[in-house]
Length: 199
Image 1 (cartoon, one colour):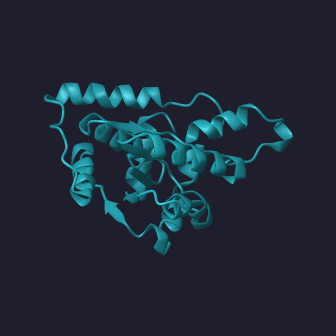
Image 2: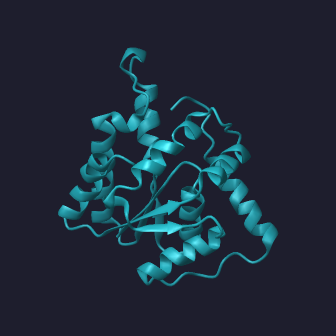
């Protein structure tokens, strides 16, 4: 089974994914961005696009990898990835479903102001690439294909993970005890996913 966690940049996708990963035995986090950064670093500058999702190779690779992992891995594959173009979503998710793979998709919905605040907390200002995508994401996620949504402005990461698990009827292990321990876990995930090169 694949669990795709969508949402604007700063919505908490990655933190939620790793919270679920810690609390669901035999689960795995798959990051589609890795293929995008590989493409951007390994083509001539004249071929580079503003968003690596616009490469058909990115969409094909992630579809193929997810299909392969789902066919060989019996656990839950957790995919934290912003996607707002319905056609791109269909190229990956609908094809996987047509292959008989169960894909659950949820969009995390967060207000614009809170998204900006979260981006600032990780060193991305109001003129950053991620901040400049907020309006596009908020608009794109209004398409009917993205209607399975969770409004998470006033929810902790633990609560978001638990809400998703409840919808899926999945039992979770207890959250890590102690506020400081959970803070360190969040900090570790945040710094492991800072990108030091252009998208």
